[in-house]
Length: 327
Image (cartoon, rainbow, N blue to C red):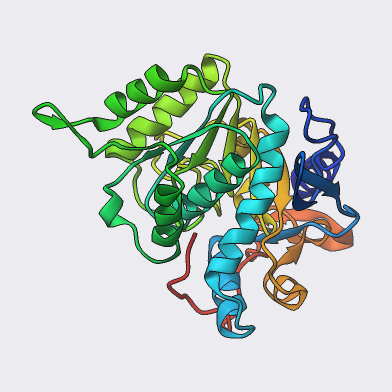
C-alpha cells in the first residue's frame, strides 16, 4: 500500500500503538483529566475518517471556527495543547527527565507554551527555549507565555544577554543542558503550516540542534508539522534546507497534504491526529477524506487509473479565500 491510503492507514494504526510510559497505555485521541495521581488519559474511538488539509484550508479552519462558530482562538490553542500533552507524556520514559521545548514566534510557539503548562502540571519537568525576545510574542502565544512566567517555568531566550552579546541558539541550549541534562523528549514548536519563505538564521540553527539531539538519542515530537517542511509539497521549504526529523508528528485536526509523498516520511516519523475542537461541519467542508484523495497533480483516468498532470485534487474552491489565520 502506498500513497495517501498508506499514510492514512499509518495514522489510524498509530492510535493503537503501545507507548513505553507509566502514564498511558496507548496513544489514541484522549480525554485528559487532572486527577489525584496525575493526568488520566482515556482513549477515544479511532474509527473516524482521516481528513487531509492544505496549507490554505488548515489556515481557514481556525478562522472559520472563530468567526462562524464563535470559538475563541485561545480555546483552540488550549485543546491543541491537551492533545499534544497526551502524546508527549506517552513518549516520556523517565518521569523526572526534562522535556525541552523549542518555541518559535507564531501560534506554534503558543501551542508549545500551553503544552509546557500541562506537562508541568502533570509532574514532568520542562524547559522552553524561545527563538525570540519575550516581548516579541503577541495574541494567544503571549497569553500562554505570561502564564508560563507566572508559573515560574524555566524559559531561556536566545536573545538574553550573556556578557557582551546575546546567548544565541548555542548558548541557550548549553544553558538548558547544564541546568537539566539530556532531555527525555524534544518538542519542535518552531514553525507551522503557514511557512512559505526560506528557513535561515536562528531558526535554521535550532533545527540543526533538534536533529543533533535526536541523533544523540532524544526522541522528537513535532507540533502539527516538522519545522522546515512545506505543508503542501512535503519537501523542505528551502531547497536543500533544514527540516526537523521527528519521531512523532501530532498533526492537528487532520493530515497535511504534504505528508502524503513518500519523500516526506523521513521527516514525519509516526503520525497521529490531534483534536483541537473544530466543529465537524468545518472539517467536512474544508477537508478531503484521505481514502478519496490521490497524489497532487494526478487525476482519475479511464477505469480509475491514476494519470499525472491532471488538476490538483486538493486545490480549494473560490469560497476558500486566503486569510491571515495561520499556525
